[in-house]
Image (cartoon, rainbow, N blue to C red; front, side):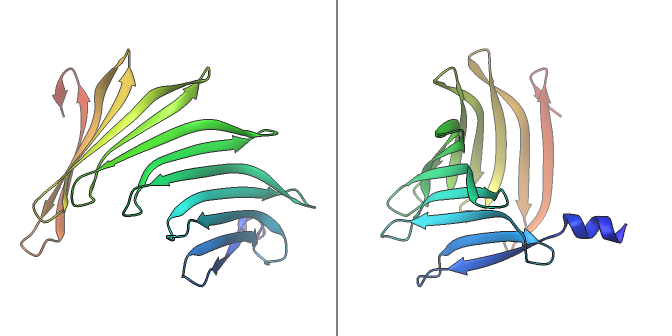
Length: 178
């Protein structure tokens, strides 16, 4: 059993630029001698993350696997993430759209999938916060039959010290949360 576990174990080594930004995560086998995959991080001149590329080691060279491209708002928060995989060229898979309130709290994410060269809605998450900017509710919806349908919900409760003390999770069916 120990021998089998050793073959599945990995070690990851991290590198940073002069601004403290993560620029590389290199994953090797448990001994640290055989490359497995590498993740590269790229930033714009404002130090906002704009691209992540993952490559796999084929024994002789790094081969593109996937990448994520980011668009950011003035605060550096992502407003869009485009995920692609490599197949001779980059191919679109999913797109994530992010919306924020005036306090830069994430209030909505929409996931779209590429189907027949068209972006199609897939999931929507909505987030609600209290006056202290603490998350109080999360709702997940799925796009079916050209409409958003409720799937899951979570409610978050805090004590007077603003520490999370309880989470309630619900599913949605037959027009009610249970």
